[in-house]
Image (tube, rainbow, N blue to C red; front, side, top):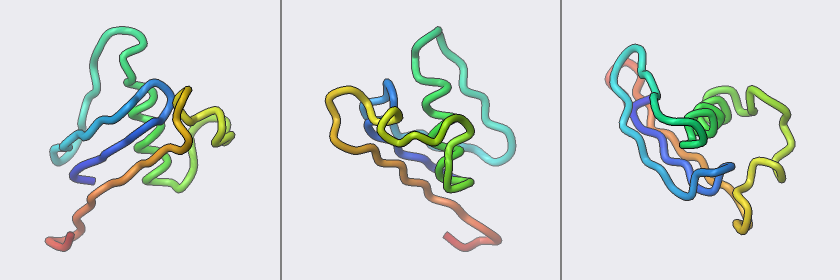
Length: 78
């Protein structure tokens, strides 16, 4: 995956992250959204969450829906 964009997932209002090739490390303080970001990546890659798959609990408080989008490239193709 080259880029991920997540909106209204748990504590993330909106985030867009460009990913490099190979291993990417997410670092930050507690409650900054690292696990939510990982949850968004898991939903995109596997079509489901790595945790309990209860969509209403994933939607950020006050939001009506969540959105996760990814851009991937395989063998020079977007």
